[in-house]
Amino acid sequence: MILIKNIKLLVQVQEKTVKIAAGSRMAELPVLKDAFLYIRDGVIMDYGEMASIEDSAFYNEFTGNGTETVDASGRLVFPSFCDSHTHVVFAGSREIEYIDKIKGLSYEEIAKRGGGILNSARLLQRTSEDSLYEQAMRRINEIMMLGTGAVEIKSGYGLTPEDEIKMLRVIRRIKDTTPMIIRSTFLGAHAVPAEYKKRQSEYVDIVVNEMIPRVAGEGLADYIDVFCDRGFFTVEETERILEAGQKHGLRGKIHANELDFSGGIQTGVKYNALSVDHLEFTGEDEIEKLLESGTMPTLLPGAAFFLGMDYPPARKMIDAGLPVALASDYNPGSSPSGNMQFVMSLGCIKLRMLPEEVINASTINGAYAMGVDEKAGSITKGHVANIFITKEIPGYEFMPYSYGSDHIDKVILKGRIITGQF
Image (cartoon, rainbow, N blue to C red; front, top):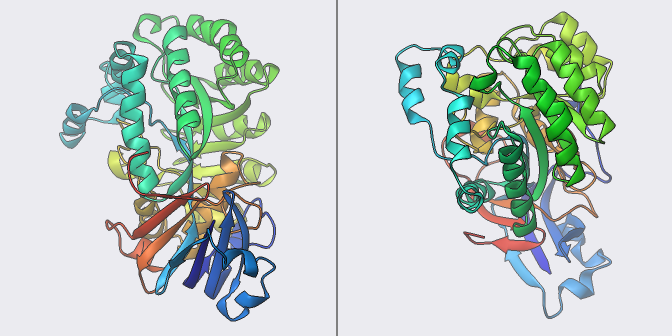
């Protein structure tokens, strides 16, 4: 049991679960000044103003023995970030390609030379499951201490039935051994292996007929994803894969419109995808389709920043009435960082989003984009107690404003104070 008292600002307070913040509501952020928060059995039990703390139904309980008291004077308390798009299970880094990017090669040019995703696939295929788990856990511990409490992790660097299964088993181990909320996504259609370069339909056959049944049969994934974009998978191939996923109970999440107007957004909406992600190329038609759907537009500004690409039109999307989520895209090739504090800063600086909007995008909307909105993303009674306490800062606007610094003092996940490696 933990009682946090004298909280300068309790951020993202919701009386009941809020699924999404959309349009003008993204600029609304409910806070409580001079507050307390009570956690028991890993769950948020109560909160309120310090002036009314003695009126709490749990007052006698949290003032008794066995309750740890944390004084948060001058500090803010946030719900943990919900990072709905990552690739944190990978083998090794790709800093040589980073140098190629500095020299002027594009993401697509590097991929055509056998680099990019295919490079990561070769490394992963030579790496044991135990080693993959150990490497991934270092990244998990890193993002945990930077404020992330829920994370979606994709496969997609295996590109063979055995290696995709290997990745998904690693994700399951992470789910079983950390206090974070984990969602797993099967991304066998991340790229076409080199040996299928001119036989792409044959590889799609393998994804549909071999990989999906095995993944679903072992219960290894919550969702299915496809990289639907120029130079990767076509709309027709994407539809075939999503249909196969649906037959096996896997809802879609799509990499869409990062490199061109690929039709990926429209395909995601057509197949009721939970989210469509990247979206650098988004126009009026795409926005209209999204407005008619329950699909969450998810923006990955870390990738656009690292690759030197144009940013998605977040302002246009929000002003049209859409919700947007922000995620890190933590991966070795196009976004080698899972720091959601920095992602929020990019949201403000590069996407012209307000501080309230980036907080909503990385909490409530991020929770929706990974299907955990009933238990994460806000300070709500009954939600999992995944929160963080900041250092002494002036206000919530300081989080994205003061980019590059870590503003977190304490991390609490499932009601436990996390002090380092888990």
